[in-house]
Image (cartoon, rainbow, N blue to C red; front, side, top):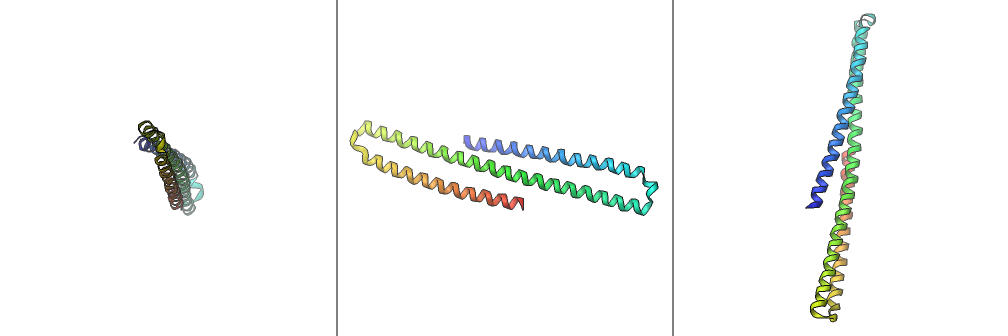
Length: 158
């Protein structure tokens, strides 16, 4: 449960970070184009109506293109950072699960030795094989998750 809470909080912070960045960048673009639009308004009489309309249209198109390009770059950076974060958290979670299982095997072996004596090595070997099988399963699961994260990352950035 602790792992899920940590993961959710880190992902929320990441989303918040990129939402703030997106707002700041888009606002800066809009402010820049407001200034350019005001400059265009000042020289409106010198340009003539047709040239003014053409320049105004181009200015608006440039603003929209720049805002869209900025949003795409921010979305791509967000997707990449989120994929990296998920990858690291998944690795950490898998390692914690393996360490927990190893601790359980050691505790069970110690308990078995204290209850039955030294001749319970056969059960310890069985537990060790089960632990190795669990580790292999977790590594396979981790590889699968990493591939899925990379696929999501590619899907989001395209």
